[in-house]
Length: 525
Ligand code: G3H
Image 1 (cartoon, protein in one colour):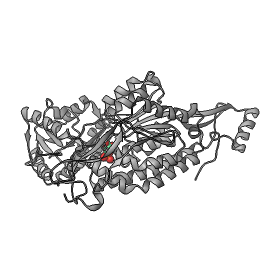
Image 2 (tube, rainbow, N blue to C red):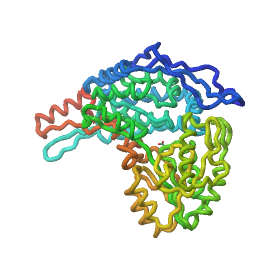
Image 3 (cartoon, protein in one colour):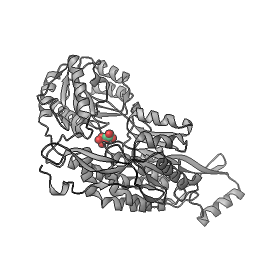
Image 4 (tube, rainbow, N blue to C red):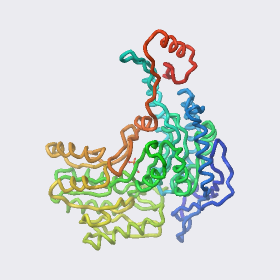
């Protein structure tokens, strides 16, 4: 196997501790092995990367108690800390994190099979996200550093933390998406319990000490194990104030139902999607094909924002299918560090089998595989199949495939894709390809009410992270963006007093003395 020296696995990572109450607690109980589906030898064999602790209910509740105690009924050091001091902790963390780039990028490639440029991008984008969050938090603080008066009542309104946040991220962006929850939750003064995703777990190990040394004890608690074993008792305790999860609605529903008082639980959820591409007959076909290739195949379609179904007007569908299929077949498959590689091993060992089932079901119901390489299978991959014509009876139409298979449908009347979207369980984004504004205008006006982002002649994507990321129906609860996430993880809370000499003198004293961290008109530039 020709693996460049710097990417070879030379030693295993035995993660034998977990972070609770500011301490990296040694774990000598059961552990599970972490394998990569990438082979290190000529004859295929998964590569052992290391081990992680299989924690149980006791350790999960210990982490929860640490987060509850750090919040300490709103009196904790972290939720009452001055804005500038919380920012200082975050800056310490990000500076330390940046020193771990190479280790994390290497693990991203091995654990989830993401290409080298995309793994680097995931790391850098996360670092930028932290800096942008700090800037946005300063802006929020500047905006709130004032009193207002209405109807004889003074008010000093800020956004305060919600309490304890349970953070669960997805395997396809184990760093970026998890941190896009964790970082805003932390900076707003919440305390957290974080369980890494099912894959992409070891890449958190290089960051554990940075978490431990940058934040006060109990503010960040990191646990390992099966979601059902560790997250369920945490939810059942009723002590979680926010469930922050990027994953699927089944697990989100199961977890939120464990909370004894659902009215107390705020949800911040990024869930499944089946974003369609709609290619109108006047679309620039070169551009539409380019964007549909990126949208449906980047990271093998394992993105919640991936294009998972493609509608093409019947007048151009033959031409589209021919050129699109050739482009899919031209994509290079290889290991993540290989130059020009676009398709990489699937990190879930059972994924090729699942995709094969979708293909078999579609073929049995009348679809054909249009591209020559479609469905070719190796130990850790199944080459993307372009399936046509797809219909509503097929599983590949109904299910979020989250992998390399591309269903294509033709349409005569635009109401066909619109009706499908209205009936669908999902409502995240759409890609619309066309140029005639008379057709586009009414379509855009409808589509914005079916999904939350209409990408004109562009593939769907989450970024740039300053834009709102959300969805309708089973696709999301709450909105994430650098700005919106700070709102999602906080609540408006304020001090009010009737405008009279007695109260005003007290307020003035409070401000002059700088004794309160909340009642303050100071701000950081
Ligand atoms: O898995 C869903 C991600 O939020 C997609 O993000 O569009 O930047 O790949 P992306």
